Each structure stands twice: as C-alpha cells, then as structure tokens.
Length: 174
Image (tube, rainbow, N blue to C red; front, side, top):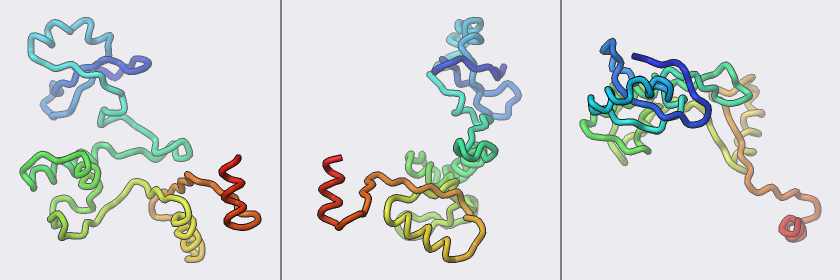
C-alpha cells in the first residue's frame, strides 16, 4: 500500500514497511489515512507528521539554480546503513551527516579522532573573506568548473570606501 499523493502544508502521514518486502518506507497522505486509520492503529503502526521530502524517492533539487541536480537520499541512506552495521551501534545525527557522504563506506577505515575520512560532499558552503580567497585561488587556477557546487555566504557586509575605522562606524549606523 503506497501513496504518491501529497497534501498541501505538512500532511499527517504513516510510516510503514512496503508490502513488497523491499524494506522501503511508505508514506501515506491524509486522504489514505482516513480510510485505513483504524486498521493501522490495530497493527500498532505509529503515525508521524512527515514532509514529502523525507521520502527516499522524492526528487529534491539542490537549489533553485540547479533544478536538474537532485539530492541523492537513496545513496545517503545506503551509506548510513553500511556504516551502522560496521560500527554495530546507533549513529548520532552528526555521524549520519558525515558518514552519509563517505567515498567508500564499506572499506574505508573509520576510527574517531584517528583516521582522515574521504568524503564526497553535495555542496561546499564557504563564508566571508575565507570564501572570497578560496574563489580567487580557484579563478587563478584556470580550471573551467568546480568539482562540487560551491556557495559563498556573507553575513557581515562592510563596504570599504575610506578606511577601517570610518567604514566600520558607517556600517554600524546604516
């Protein structure tokens, strides 16, 4: 029993195993729940508030500027499952974020505080002056394209016009 429909806003959904024994997560919309709510409760299935992006099969664009590049939820989940089995323990959220992006989760050595991890990030987010320096170095390398999509986040924009002290004073006022 699988539902591909979605309700506006945050639909109430049910997380249950797929009937074809593939161990996929099945999300049901509010409309489907009304017809099967009592039978699902009788089976002991817990109900959650879910967003459609949590479904592994959902196609979520990396950004508005990259509508054809999608987040690979299936690969992230596969990597996390491999590492969880290797370590034989539950993972923290931070570990899931990092280990989901391992280059070779089955064979890569994982020892906290000792090994360097080979990662394949979806995006590189940089900040302020460090980001500008990194981009200038990339531009001077002569390469035509970055290997991973990159974003620069500037959270304090002080326009340089006169000098450090005067520019900072002007920025605080405006």
